[in-house]
Length: 117
Image (tube, rainbow, N blue to C red; front, side, top):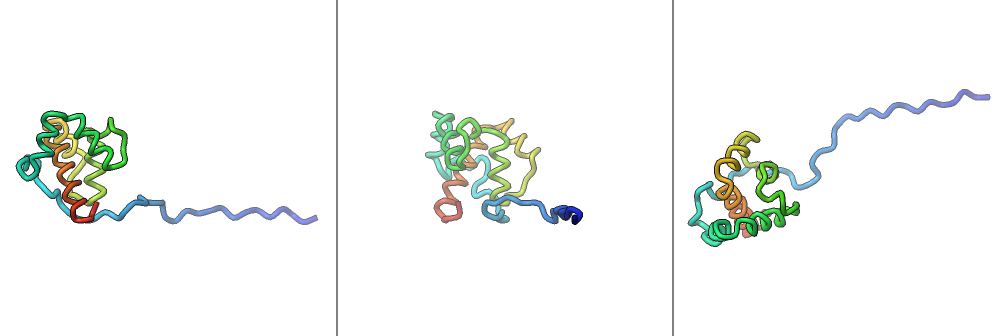
């Protein structure tokens, strides 16, 4: 009788990464308080904030409840290689949530127009 053959252990050399598009190094397309560059977005945010938040979440294929979260801003920023930190995202969403969501939506609209979204 032969001795049983032992299988070699599997060694993982690299960890799987994010499978989406590779991050690009860029900046926000508009500044936080650049409301007049797209008045329609800012008016929507001012008078129907929930609708705007749901639009942002839908654009990013996320749950509608996530549209205003720090996680959503961080996800968007890292997806497009926009400089910043989790602390920055927290402060922006805490201090001016309306401006944060409007900025993300304006950025989505501009990237979509450039076929970069």
